[in-house]
Length: 297
Image (cartoon, rainbow, N blue to C red; front, side):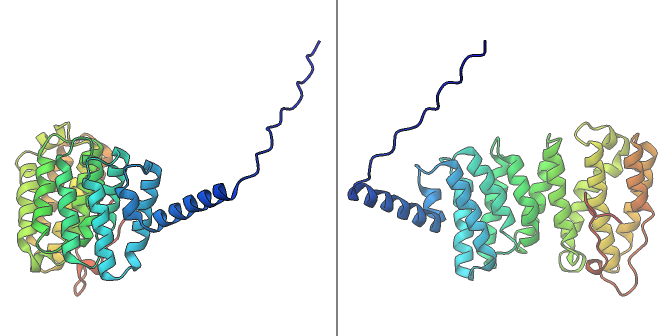
C-alpha cells in the first residue's frame, strides 16, 4: 500500500518588523551600495567575501577604459595593490593579476602602467601565481613604456630559459609573441630588442635543432609558438628593409623540418619557410593577420 503523502508544511508568517528593524535593514542596504560604488574599499575590507572582491575587481576593469587619466591611474593602482597583497584570498590575487595586465593598455598614465608591469614581473617569483602573472603579462605587452620593453623581454626570456613547461611555457611564449607582434617599429626604433631575441631564443635552436626538438620542455605547441615568435621578428625586420634576419629564420625552419617528428609542427615550419615577403611599400603593421592560435604567415 502506498503511504499517504504527508501534509504540506508551511513556515510561520514572519513577525511584523519594528521601525528600528526597518531602519537597521535600510542602513545595511545603503552601506552595501556604498561599498559597491567604492571597489577600493571592498578590496581593502578584510570582512568582504572573495565573491564581493571579485565583483570589485570587475567594476574597476569596467571603469578604467572611459575614466579620466587620474582616475585610470588610481584604479590601476587599486588592482596593483590587490595583486600584490598577501592578505588577499588566493583567488582574488590571481584574478587581480590577470585584470591588472588587461588594463595596462587602456591606461594612459605611463607611470601607472610601469608600476603594474613591474608587479606582474615580480609575481613570476611567487609560487602558485606564476601562471596568472603570465596571463596578465600577455595583454600588458601592448602597453609597455619604452623603458620597460627590454626589462619585459629579458624577464620572459629568463623564464623560458628555466624549467617551465606545459601551460606556463605556452603562456610565456604567447606573451613574447604579443610583444614582438606589437612592435613592428623595433627594427628602426629599438633594434637591440630584436638582437636580444635572436641571440637568446634563436641562436640556441640554431646551434642544435635536434636538441631543441627533443627537449621535453618544448612541446609541439611550444615549438610552433617559438617558430611564430621568430618569424614575426624576422618579418618585421624584412618589412623595415633588413632582409637578412628573415632569411636566417627561413633557413632555420628548413633545418627544423628535417629533425622534428611531428607532422603538424613540420607543416607549421614550412608555412613560415615558404611565406611571401612583405609587399614593397607596406609596413609590417599593415600586413599582419592573426589566426586563432597565433600569428601565421
